[in-house]
Image 1 (cartoon, rainbow, N blue to C red):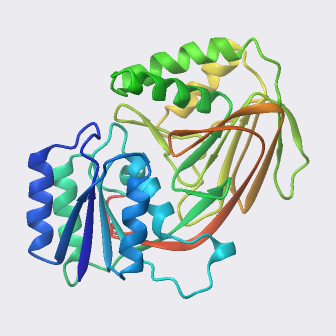
Image 2: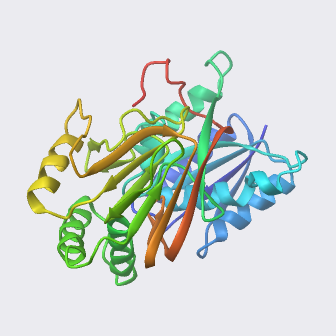
Length: 321
């Protein structure tokens, strides 16, 4: 088996010791090539090279942004897939600050423990890989979530903080979310959400479109906007039509509950749909897998089932969310 290990050396929790441990473990099972990302978009370039050269496995040691870049580098979009492309399997070793995709797959947050999981999954008799669905927004794959409005504003602010040398810690995310929430309260609701089988939902302030649950964490605590959404289902939609403090706190409490099933008068939520269309009265922020993409007036979201083979425990194998 031929493997490319993509390492983001600038990711929050990526260390030379963990990288060397991972490389040593993979070398004992595969023919390994190690590559370090050097600039934004480099992971996509490396992944495309791996697919062109028909590598069997790509392992990413980095954060959610590096994983997203990698997938968009080797996995063709449905409209351009002629069925001839070589598609490697994907393995993930957490190396970022949140590692939502890895944790949603049932992988350990500790890189050493996740390395042991990966090696176990590569062993004969482990039960095989897991085939999952992904989603598309703005002609780009995403693994766990996209957000329009408030969430995108938070990601944009975090990107600015990172550029100024501040790490993206859970505490910083929380402070930034509170600050952006109170700024967004001054704006009129600008979004309309359209979902097949439902009447259009107007007057929306912000919306999340998710591919799994949980799709984010407050430190180690999962946040569940759409508990019925999984990698094996359609998309989850969570659209808020109020910026009132008390209604928001009521919903936030439900999101953090272990048995959370958020419901509210000013919340539109559905957990298993094939597509979503969100339009805005004026350009509004879009984030994909935690990265700010830019501003849009229209975004189409589409679920694509069973499109990616990942080296991860199956949902029925014990550890999963």
